[in-house]
Image: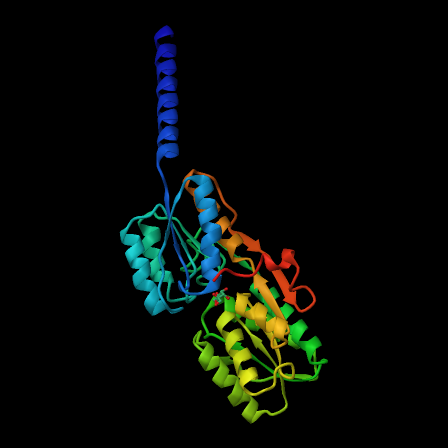
Length: 327
Ligand code: T6T
């Protein structure tokens, strides 16, 4: 009996030692968290990186920021593969397509690298529910894009007095964020029987194309009243198109995203309203969430971040200005 209690005490001591040793190892290891943006030259992701870096510095984590020059799965997949080859402790990614990133991210998952998506999602965006091939990411941190689309529709409807023709300037189908913004916009516009929503124009994230499309839509519809630019480049391009037509203030523009250029356009009257996301917050919580996973905590499967609405009435307020993206 005495011997048994000694053995048990020894086992407990060993377990305690192993436990404390592994805790020490975990604390001493400097984690590397990779952040793969939709593209590197977009003020939205530049701002997200800043928030991520803030959290990384606070937690003593190394942040690896690696992306491509275009919002495109063909460009993003090789970047992801290169990141996986560097074996980071966790991957944060803004997938550029709901379907095409599932299999390449599955590779990371199978190697035991935790995957968290920021801004956009894969598959149906419902993770960890045991359903669908893309349910393995641990968390999704983003704006509520359906709500953002609804907010844009309400603002545009108000700006055009509740009647007339409008359309959505969008990137391309298959991107979770911009698909959901268009969905929310159309759902809300169904409440305005005198507003006609024309066919969506897809610009491949190219502002020049979006500007040319605005002018072409106007040529076919000289009674065009407004446009919703569903992301930064769509909005800037649509605004450029309105300006080129000399219709500033006549064709109303509601923008998603808030780089300095959109602020300037609000001040000049070219853009009526912008829905700023909080990309720094997305990056910050992305890193915090990955870190929590790495130290053995459970994490929320979804974290929603907010919006700030910018228009001529508040654009000079410093509390609003702090949500303008960094270039
Ligand atoms: O609107 C953001 C982002 O939320 C979207 O997923 C892609 O476009 C942006 O990066 C803006 O260009």
